Amino acid sequence: MGQKSIGAFIAALRKANGMTQKDLAEKLNVSDKTVSRWERDEGAPDLTLIPVIAEIFGVTCDELLRGERKTPEERASEADSAEESATARGQKQRQRLLAASLTKYKNHTYIAMGISLAGLAAAMILNLGFLYAIVGFSVAMIFLVAGVVCQLIFINNAFAAVAGIDEGKDLYDYKKSVVRLGEYSFGLDVFLLGVALPLLFVAAYLGLSAASWLAYGLLAAAVLTVVYVVICWAVNASLVKKGVLRMEETAEARYWKRHRLQRKYGVRLSVALAVTLAAQIGVNAVDATVFTSGTLFEDYNSFVAYIEEEVSRDTDYYGTEAVAVVSEPEEAVLIYQAYTEDWEPLYFNEDGNPVSESYVNSLGNVTYGDALVDGEGNLLCKWVWKNRSVSRLSYGSASSGYLPIVAYDDEALAHGDMVLFWLNVLFAAAYAAEVVITVVVYRKQRSK
Image: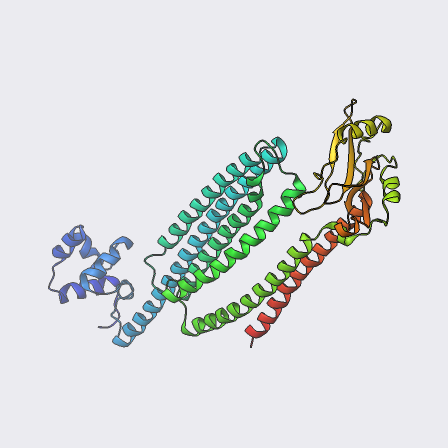
């Protein structure tokens, strides 16, 4: 059939299908005169009727407008083109759907994280502002639970939104992003739980200082975060193994190779960190006097003269003002002697070390009176503790009469504490170095 006008083509199609102008008019809900005008080229069908006419005669709209049928070769070429076009449009719609769903999920995840952070803010206000540490912890837990529940709902909605989509790399990337964002959100919850945890161990109606909270909170948060990372690592491997997180064969092989490397270096790092932690615990268990030097006394007389020298503690090593507690030595000596008329071997603790007894004079000032006795209750020496700069005493063995005696004042102990502080800083640096070295070596092995 050669190329004709639209009207002539409609007339030819109508006759080829054994239809009258009236039959066609009834199908199109127009008059037969209208059809007659079309066929005489005195008018043309409305554009809205073109698809209907094309469907009645089994032609395409393009063929109807061109006034001729297409060859089989043209039809096949156009079919392939149409299929490719439909595939391209479907792929774009698929990507658009995944992108929109992921964006919505990201926004919801930020909301869940915000709820958890609001809990920490409330805990800070209650603890630091009103000294309600336990109440602050309870409020933080309410917010954290709310954040976790919201995140679980958002994850479920994110997977439900793509339930009918065929598997593919883009869908795998989508699910991977959903799982990763969920891990980040839950990781924040675990970190915040660790930060808030020290508040649970404070006595009721007492607050925790900002410095102590920061130190203990960050330590607890670090420990819980490490445990959480290990759990996520194991859960991800389980999801891949069960096919929940599908991937291409080459990608899966690469994943398991990295998984084995991570396990290898994770074990090595855990051992290194455990050894360093054990060393740090051992160092911190040692008394601060190990890291400083005091005043050494080889005899009782020089020690008693030193400890009875009246020295007020106006300020301690850190600059905090202190109150002098020794005011009237004569009265203090009399009170001390009145309380120690009968000597009994009661000045030793369960370890056999000497202990102190304190007394209060008539003015309400605390004065410390001490004595050294041997195992049979014989008095070795006694003194009134008037040198208020001395904070701690160290004794020799009982066989030598507890000589020599070492006295540590505030400045000496503060020096020991400072040495211990810098040792802990070195331990922290060792932790960081172990982590960095392990990560660097792991990345080199992974790239091979």
